[in-house]
Amino acid sequence: MPFVERVVEPKFLSRTSLRDENGKQKVTDEELQAVTNCTLSNALRQLASLVLLAEDIFSELTGQLEAIKERSKAAQAKIVTINELVEKYDPKKVPVRKYLFKLQLVSV
Image (cartoon, rainbow, N blue to C red; front, side, top):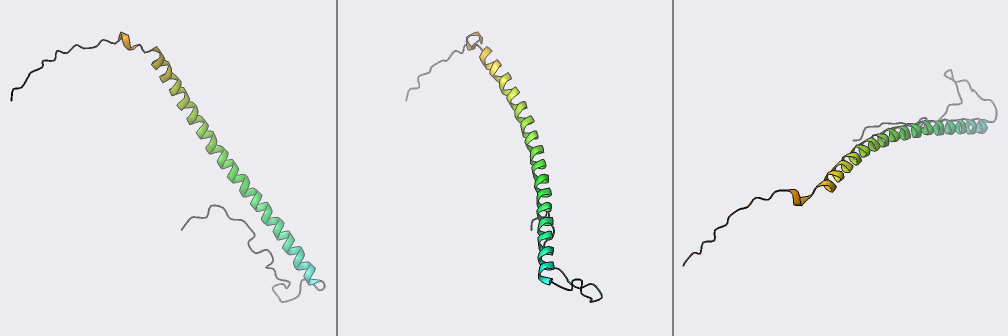
């Protein structure tokens, strides 16, 4: 089961109560408009939460890409160094050992 890293809030946009804890109505007229306004405000809150999470994701991604960039620079420096060594290498200057090979004919 995966771990939840980020949660978008609010989850239930239209779930609201038009009565207070004593049972008295909060809104006396135009209940549909009150529910609609509550739903729209919760939708805006959810979008704001989503924007904050997207900013968090992109900042984390930026940090990871910076680390990759630094590692790439180090690898490129090593490649340049190795390339310079290979270009300076002259195989004609390397001494070659001389081995004497004796061929023996085996009679059957």
